[in-house]
Image (cartoon, rainbow, N blue to C red; front, top):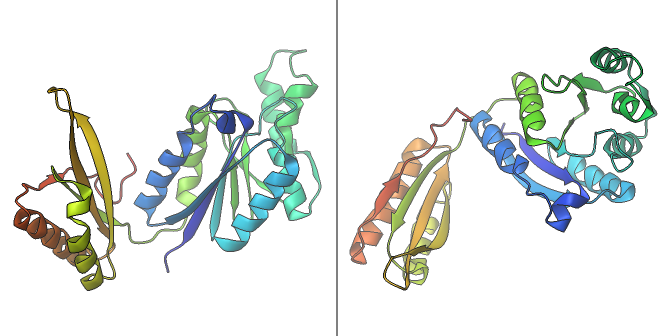
Length: 259
């Protein structure tokens, strides 16, 4: 059975626009390669009640939840406390996390702020951090990771072997220089015939070098049945040719990888 997942992005810096969330896209690609369906992404600020509410909603709805952000040493890093509150458990210094962090710093440098990174909800297992030592953690169906992209990616690689596997989705993208509105009717007919394949339509505008943008559309057929996806893609290409367009297939990431 295909597992579902959600991402909870935590941090005022995301909501303010100061920091761009690149973590969600990376997690989505990794999950897709594992055959896990990402179904929802939420962003909340550094407010404990809001983190608790969002986490409880997501973990009760989807099979897996991945959080990013809010596990550093500063006052606004409150994710660990919020997770503990959501699960109704205590939080304290994790002996292994404390030892690892203490060993990382010179004598006198392991201050109270840095000790905060060793506070882990009771019952949680650590997620190793080969970049900067300070661990994430895993409790029930929730995986709590750092917000710094390099660290988050390293943590995610650590937990990939633990995650369930399913059949990865196969996607074919077809591009044509036609307005999106001209393909709507034909796409609807193809979608009606191929109910097990998801069809997406994504218009684009590009610099034509002639003073006005060149417009077009990318049409994506996605599903787990390779034959059905190919049949759908062929139908889309035939429809585009009937409209006088020259469809082109765009190279895809090979299913089963998360490069």
